Length: 115
Image (cartoon, rainbow, N blue to C red; front, side, top):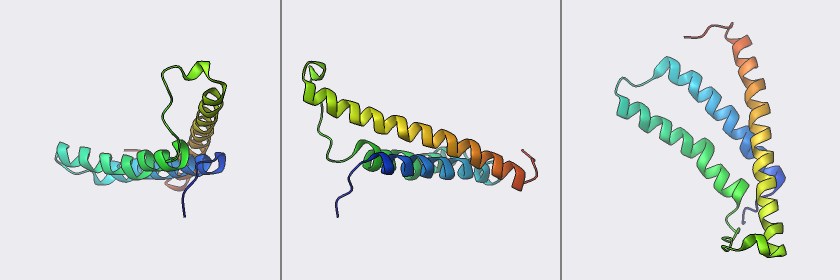
């Protein structure tokens, strides 16, 4: 089964990033490794799982071919570029909305305490 990037998969990737990174940030504030290199390595792993890999497969798409240097002169390439930009905007909007809502829910659930 090949994964095809669509607006729906971009929305799922945005929600996944928001749920994962907001939750991970809360977890890291309580359980951060003492060494800076360890903390950076754990954050890099979280970004890979919740951001880089889903964006590559679900937003950009593996089947998206590179654009030529003169993509803006070719109507077909402009259309392909527009689709990619549209999916990126859907991802960004969905991630923002879910992050705001999830932060409010977690803040309410945890009693509004922050450390």
